[in-house]
Image (cartoon, rainbow, N blue to C red; front, side):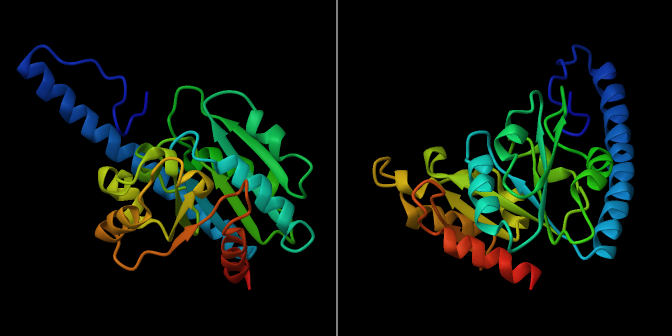
Length: 237
């Protein structure tokens, strides 16, 4: 169960008991986030000392985060030294997919949690960051809500939105899209077949973050990948 969002909490049946438990939940949430923020600051300082730019990739499950990372690591191999921390509730399938592409990979299994936290990232950093590492990708657990609340010590967040999810996710889940440094629209090769409306999606993004940096791409076809790779190169230049 996520202590912050309360996923899985049963409905309370008595008003007095509900009030009592609500107070305890709020207090617990504050303590959890305060402790997490302390550790996130520690992570951020550790990365800054080494000159590493860390990107927290957040999206729904199935948006294409891992496939984008595969293609990104292949393109940057020998050009920009990268590391990857990838989070899932169970299995190391993503880490296996990313092996052998020029970056150190560390899989974190969160078991029952719907997000990575700063403590988990801290224990993975030394495994994926070398003296010459420039760019760290943190592939968060697939979820548009809980990962947004937890600072991992990253330089910034990047939101991914795939065309099969529809156009209106930015206004349904505004916190992520309002705080992300960039919004990457993935699976653009499927847009026409899905009758997906790019103009509507961009309008929704602008509603929650005017002037947002939006990158359109398809990791499968290669469309827009140069824009994404050039964006990453600018971050570490």
